[in-house]
Length: 101
Image (tube, rainbow, N blue to C red; front, side, top):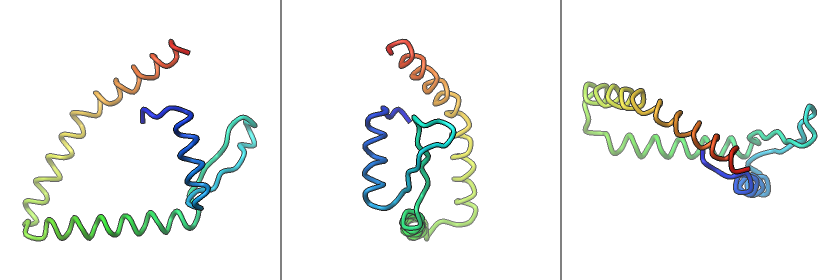
């Protein structure tokens, strides 16, 4: 995700403050915390997903089923082609962070 620990902690704190996630101490590692979506967070995610689905359906209303299937196939191929690059970038970033620590 290329997000620093301090940024991630700040974002998690904001989400906790808004009631969208719950944060608890990890019983196996007292230095760590476990996070999960709260019921309010799950409701918000469902609302966002519904809005995005509605917006996408409106934008693609004039597409045929065949056009949608073709687009999904191209997206799947693109994802398969680019996933190794993303994995390599993530590994390289992790190695740089370790070496700079």
